[in-house]
Structure formats: C-alpha cells, structure tokens
Length: 356
Image (tube, rainbow, N blue to C red; front, side):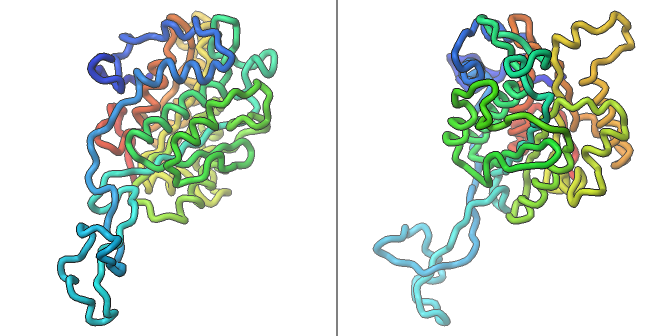
C-alpha cells in the first residue's frame, strides 16, 4: 500500500499530508449527506492536497511578434529590437507560449484514465455490486464513487500545481471525459462532484460493458500526439481482476492496439492503480497464502512489466483493498493518488516509476 509523508499541521498549512495511520477515515462514515461523493471530497481534500514548490518559467519563448509600446509590457520587448527589425521593419517582442515542461519550466500534464466497466457500479445501483464502505445513513459506496472522489482530488492538486490535465474513460472502447490539455479546474470539479443519482447516465464515469484498458491507452496516445508535451504523468484506475499474466498483458501491452504501455511511458511515469473492496478482502479465508483479486492483479501486472522491461517496475503498480469507515484506509489511498499527480514536481513521496 502506498504511504504519504508527514507534513505540517492544519493550523500551519491546510494543504499537507499526514503520516500513514496518523489520520484515519474517522468521521467519513458519520457523513449522511445527499451527495456523499462531494461530502467526502470536501472532508478530505484540505488535509491531503498541498501546495507544490514554486515553479520557474511556466512559459517559454516560441518566436517573435510585433511590439506596440501603447499596449505591450516593456518586459516583453526584445533588447536587440529597440529599433525596427531590418527585415520585417517593425519593433519586435518575445512571443510566449504555455509549456507542459518547457526547457526552462517545470509544469507538467496529468492524464487520468478510469475503468468504467460494469463492475464499477456500486450497491446503490445494483444489488450485489462491490461495496467499499457505507455512510451513516447506509449509502453504499461503489468503485465509481471511489474513482470520482480521488479524481477530483487529483484535479484539485493539478490546480494548485498549475498543471494541465485530461480525463479519459474505458470499458471495451474509450472516450474523452474532459478534453485537455485543460486548466479549467473549477469547471471539471463542478462536473465530477455534481449531485447525480446512482443510475444517472450523465455521471462522469457511468459504468457499463466489458474491460479493455488498451483502448484507453490508445486514446491517450492519440490525444497526446496532437500536442508538444515534454513530460506527462498518467494514472490508470481499475478494479479489473486480471489475475493471470496473459490477461494483464492483454490489457496494457496488446499489439492489436496502436498504443500501449511502452509508448505512454516514454512521455513520463505511468501508474496502474488497482482497487478492490476491503469488505471482500476481509471475508477471505484464513489461509495465509490466499490473496485478494486486487493483490493477484497487482502481481500479474508487475510480472508482465518486469518481463517487458527487464527490471523491477513494482512501483508502477499499486493495489488498494479499500474500506471507508472509522478504521478504514481511504485517506491513505487518496493521499497516494494525489502524490502521483505531483510526481513530476520533485515534491512527491511516491516510489519511483521508471520513464523509458
């Protein structure tokens, strides 16, 4: 399980991490709101999201443009062009463009890909669906609810870091949930945290269908190819039970698709986050050698990536048997994902994930 580091206390800085086990889920199960996803986000976000180090040069020069002394700042004036350019005949200024991680900058781009297969439904939508815990009034949280909460937290972190982002979803095909590169953090948070019913088809990650992660990776590859990104972080969230190495390879290294793990990883760290219900894990047999589906899936992905790249890639695959409640681990889970969103800032405590 991931861990997030100890930070200052709330009265010193509201955007901090607390040590693993120091801040539990106490109080989350006591919430009895009409919108439990938004309530849990608002309860935890101030304790998990934190301000990154100051960035240098979030823009870089991309050419020159005409300079108008009446409307343009003097800081943009090119020192060598106080007199008109001898060729184009006008005074010029530097033309700046936003960079993801420019030659002089430190900004990054965040891709989030969410599994929206049918198994991500919660018990409020379908009886018998996996449950990750209950609120005080008995509202059962499903995989979709968990995804919405932590995606909102990662977007909140991107906002503090001034990073651009894109949201994608996949089942047997893939779709764009929030087009990027975007910096409309508030608009996206409002969309994710709106008051949806458990079977509302307008939900950002409305589940249904099968599971083919490679479709999602390909859509990310196609989208990223349209932009000049120097660095990106990609986080995939799935509850898939790919407990066999061949199944795992079919999901992330499928040659039938244009882009796979290898291509995405060349653009920056790629993390797979496998979630499972802590309630299911707690009901397993007493056999010490038994493993939850979540743990088996993590092991399968780690094996496949190790064989592909000839080195340990264990830090790129994390598993969480999630349980929301007074003794739960949801806070630790959310903190680890927010740490992934900050991994290129030089201020992340997450284990290294090699870039090719």
